[in-house]
Length: 266
Image (cartoon, rainbow, N blue to C red; front, side, top):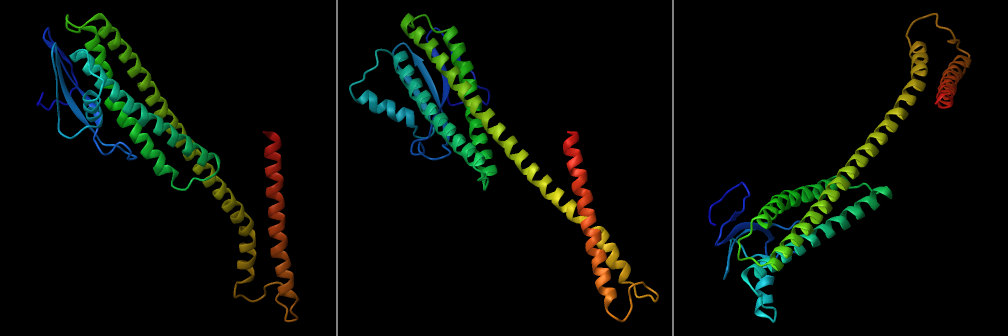
């Protein structure tokens, strides 16, 4: 039980079974990003032994429940109560995660995109972390339900199968949350790309309009003799200014005509 093994596995023998589960560290149940730890659990016919590095939320709740009026009927019943407490804690985390995703989606639909990228990235990391913790435990519980010791009663075996169904439903909810955060991230990236394209389009239009005007002003700004409209009576400046404005207006009209034609073609 004290060995550190990165590969999740379940050991089932005729005397009992050994596995590990994730639980929320006590005192961090209401934090936006709870830290979790592992509990090593051994269950045999007459007892359940747990080893953990930190005080755990669900284990502490189970201890208070046992100290009250709810007494387990067997060691397997005690384990199932602990497992149900852990499932309930993760269900609440998934519900909070879905609420946060709903809020982020409402902000995006309302155009409030300030800080939304970092927020979505955090939500997706949380969903991925929960998925990585729950999936191995789901497979472990499935393996354990298929080869329980012979002394486990039929009612307890049925409850084991019910627990595996609940874990499968929880995994589907977590995957749904992952997909939603991914879709929102893609939508946010599309919004940013569209905004960038709009800015580039406006910049291109301004550049195209100003290009002929810049050419005219550069031409008349050359310090050479014999340029037209350089008479000393002052009409040359007015005429050149009119040419500049006329060229800009003509360019804008041509661009507008081209845009309208492209829209009609689409």
